[in-house]
Length: 285
Image (cartoon, rainbow, N blue to C red; front, side, top):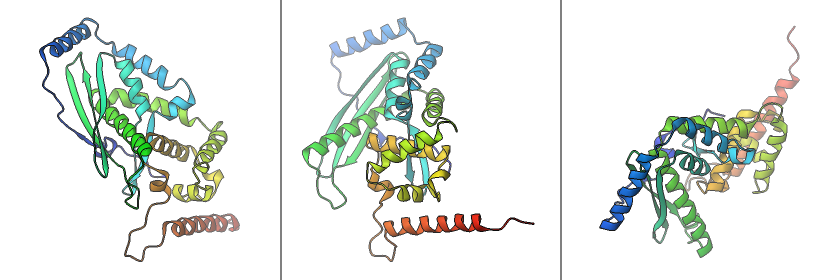
């Protein structure tokens, strides 16, 4: 797999917005009091790092949820997940955060969030839009609109928090969490089977997974591939993408493009044939 890259435009899906309302005198007094309290009890960076690392690496499940990966434009992008935003927000301290549904349109739900570092008096607002129609243009039912709205709120809040807390601190915690989530050679077989079972439960076959990873067989799925599968799992759970978008993309209309399913099978067969030929080659004298 290609090494994942971090693109700020893609990782921070959405846009920064100005959501400063007209603040009443009593509300301003409350904010000023909270800022004064934050200055009285300033954060300790060493304590932040210790607490954030402890929470992010407390167990495999938590560590898995601390980062995500997404295929975009022929490359893989990576970023810190919603759970890591919650951890960072808690450990960073002296923060005021909020997310809400700003608008539900015919085809989109719009969520907004802000994160305010009371100690540094840095405030960032973020807006995220999520489609509420399926690939056929049919509007979601009420339950799915609610699920999509909640995901949009969580993503907008994540983005706002990570615009306030310095990236260097976040990346340090994320990399530590990835090591716990992925494991090492001694745990590869078990965690690989677990990852495959998760996608199998979403009706993705092993052959489709192998074609996506560009690997000829299950035993060829290594720690780097496991990192990718874990990141995709988080992205799906957070609502940043869907199984269909990753493994069953809709082919362009009006062209002679081979359907996605046929492409998957052709790619896998080609890799299997190449590996079989390699194994069948006689040793060099």
